[in-house]
Length: 450
Image 1: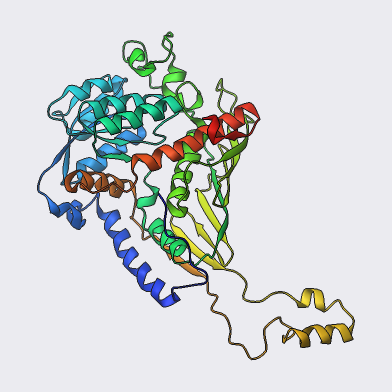
Image 2: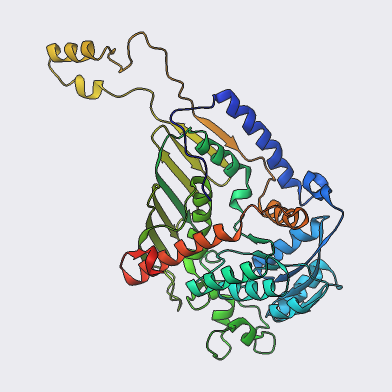
């Protein structure tokens, strides 16, 4: 995932970048129109063939992906699977009675009318179902995190090597024009050398804190609990573990997987990073004491052998501030928020007067004379350095989930690599595993410990 090394200084003028961002604005508008006018993406016109999709897991994320898929002209949803009957009924309401249903995602893999599988199940089922799908000859769109253990990683690597198919990891952030622009800034050297990358992600509601309500008909009769458990030890039906699986380490990857992994994927793609050399983390369960065994607040620092220090934090508390990434370089800082990209240059002058003005007049005059500076810190006679804040906002209606799914379908048709390939997803997932282990053990976790 290496990218060209950043060049010293600012190699692109502001006007060049403005033209570039204007082009991205048009691309963003097209990405947002996918749901309303699927033919807007030119890539969709390359082939009249329609990819037949099956979707494993039609909870919140899976159902949104099903809706996006339904609106695209290049695919059709032919089957869905979920362990809860109520979700299958809802899927039929939205997708039509002709859609086939199953309680176990593995039942989708034997269908001859399925070309690709979208996997949006609980985290512990991601890798097992993906490896089985590849073995069955299906292309795979795999939600993040793609792996929750090194065993998952090894199984996916082996399956992908033995059964080459398109695998798109489903984070989707890097499909956004914001990240295309951010990568351009990094590659053009607009930031100088990136020394620090930080990320924050707050979630302020009970639903965001994984306290999903139970439907009134939830019971062993309406839920195939064995299918949900997968390879986990058998236990009696537990609606808390089924509907609030993210809160339990046996089934979900917690904040490390749901919050850190998307940010790490983006940072790795932007900066050409891989699995970090080491990670230290601390987590605490401070508020949501509802029987869960996952922290509701987590902070971690990642060290890369040839890269910046990366510091991430996430909490299931606060005001629900959207995720934000900040890349601090020697020449500028890049801030990527939910719908805004800001390039903030370093100050054009040094605040020498803050120090020199505290000296006696002879030394003060000597300092400015020796350095050829005026009292405001500028070199006398030199032109002002170009230091202008640049902001790009994503147009209203533009999203990334539909565009990311469209990119997956395009990769199937054209044979080109998807935007978020398996290697990128696995490297971010392993960094997430390191953070979870470090928080649980209180010790620094090294790459070789995986």
